[in-house]
Image (cartoon, rainbow, N blue to C red; front, side, top):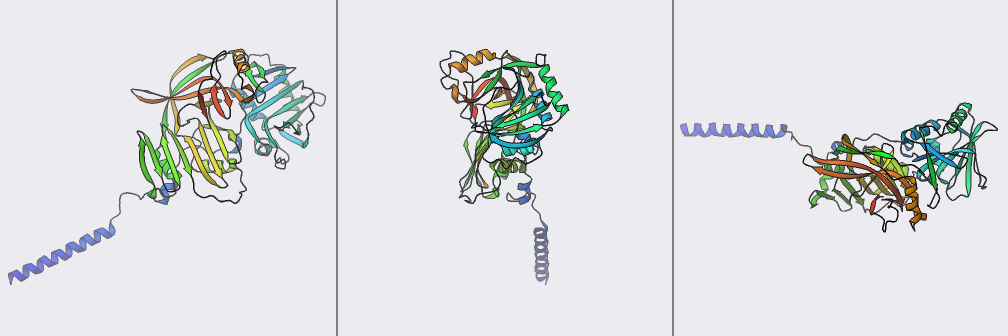
Length: 434
């Protein structure tokens, strides 16, 4: 009797324990989120501010031309402020004509961009009273504003890069006319510097005559997490394989996509079969929407070059371009598109933080740069000459730092290299490109 009672009690205990465990399993919630959680993917963001076309398409030079002499503001911040001012000036009476080469203007300002862009972009960059989108296949890399003293108006010209046609307009504003007239009357003052024209290059380039002294900077920085990039570039990270291809280098891969993260940079490629139907948006708008979606403009980036299927934005600091000679170019955001699908994406994963050290560096004079260019057998291929900051990663006992050091650079085939010293036998190695 006692044995039967014990068996019954044991059975009751086992049943009760089973019920308790079953209830616990029903109510248990894991303390982790699956890799393919859609919500977690949508939250992946690089922290950059959303940009618009007029934030990215900016000039890299503003030159005041008067009676065969050339001047600019000494400080590039002043040039940028001037450009922001003229973006508000209303441009009217727009018409397209065949270009007739005429005499040089007595006084005009030339606004020069890093690359040629469709004229239609100026619908959003400038204050125009009618659309410019009808001017198809019309590309410009600069425009000019001329003082017309007889009528006291400002005449604006966009000359096509093939120099066949011109789009003209007028700014009817006595206030803006007087503003520009006042600038031309004070070009010899301290805030301006004289420039010289280089005509041997692929396009007209203006450089300061005198030597300049600029500051080199050392920054602490933050690096974007690899997992955040993975979540952005793969719609379902749960099916992504990962491997370490070299110390500090990570490779994420699916059948069609590959993401390599190394040296504070990334390279992404998608070889999936593409949609063959044409799309309405240009590569600029597609790229802008895509990068804004994940907060990818993590610094001051500006349009450097683009074609029908590729686009490059260059990092700027203190209004100067930044170049890099690292395996992963840390100064560029570069994308390729095939219709409406992203096929390639290279970018820096570095975000500058705090300045920890500075030093001064005297740069070569414009005359020295001119001598170097004249000795260059490939001078006709030079697309631009700029003072730029070279970005390198430095390491000490406390960690890694970003070093920005100014120098003279020339751009050939969309690649930047230091302007060689006069009489140098060979040009220095490439410092970066798209």
